[in-house]
Length: 164
Image 1 (tube, rainbow, N blue to C red):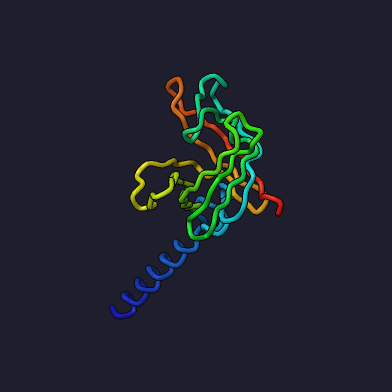
Image 2: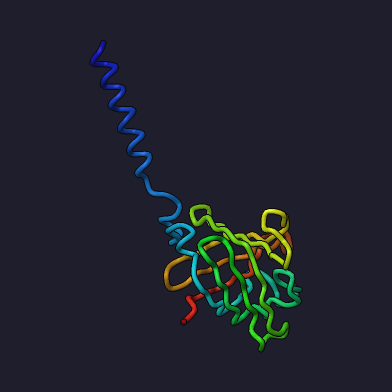
């Protein structure tokens, strides 16, 4: 009887160990690493629309046009503080916005909230949540899902590391 319980204990331990070593969702999406993988300076090179006509997108992140963000630079520090700067050549003009951000690559999320002068991040309740669909040292792709025509469509943001 004692050997039987020992055998069951060993079998259970083996199952727990195998379960903890199994592959996760990250292995299939190409997303790896933690917050530090997102940290750094990024340039938003390209914005495309999946399942959306151009005229259906009125704005993005509170700016009058999503096109204002093409060429923008995003500074994301490890502390969660950051900013984005819209280029002077955009139709919105040069704008620098302070943000507080977080990311959970294992859950494929990137979220941020705008922080204005005098605001404390903990008191700001509105923000933006994106799907982090690709992340590597060479690029980062985020999607902003939108309900359109009874289906989910996306604004796709493609980033590359900023050259210092």
